[in-house]
Image (tube, rainbow, N blue to C red; front, side, top):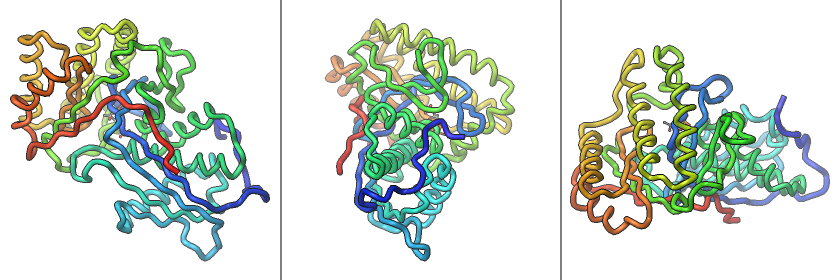
Length: 358
Ligand code: PMV
């Protein structure tokens, strides 16, 4: 049973062909989603900044499918990509009960990322978000749907089934996913926008220092699965709930000191959980730790609110408010850039969410 009312067969009226295109940003979690249960439901609530520069643009050309025709043709950055195509077919099959008309349509999907493929930045959130936006937009056109809030909810729901954290990329600025007593109407089926926090967070910076561009040794899916046997799992889920409460309280009043403490604790907890999984693994590199140490020293000496967080990888997300941009940039250029891989950094910030291009 799907949560959404289902649009069944294609209607007779409207045209069944066309093209839609969406730009969808990536996001960085402040409270991390780590550990899940079927089907792609989080063990704890999470919250993230929606980014801006790190994004995927996806265009979907659609027309009625003849029985002999290929269901999906996929081009990544202009080239046919068989492995990605297979993944998309698997994904479409997995959501066909929620969006059955897709079986009657042939899709030509073209996708590109704003960041290099080998930058060590995961693209699953932005790419699954962009694809789900395109599919729901086509559904909107085919069936003449109008409810914008329901549209976003369904996009978030469908993107979640492709990649859990993708469901948070659908909203501007800040989004939360997973039930929390602090967040009315929160759900583990989809994310919802959080728009009542202090203004300082609406243009917060996230400069992503690329420490390594290598593919991770352990994928996020494998990492989530290892939480099933992690002896600290239940304590962790409890901690995530407490962190969510304190983080929202600090963000409501713009308390940057408390914000930074919780966000850094979350990042280090995520990696600590990896280190005490069975088997254990480490995704941080020596330079990840060196960057963290230098950020903490800078913060103490300069007395400025500059913090770090980490994704499931070695790259460091440097977080700071817009009003310290000059000082933060000077510090990053003089003290951190030399620790990056080939001087690579992706300068990003909290953004306005997805944009319809066509
Ligand atoms: O969405 P997934 O399955 O790639 O998992 C994402 C996990 C983290 O990025 C580490 C945390 C998060 O909440 O985004």
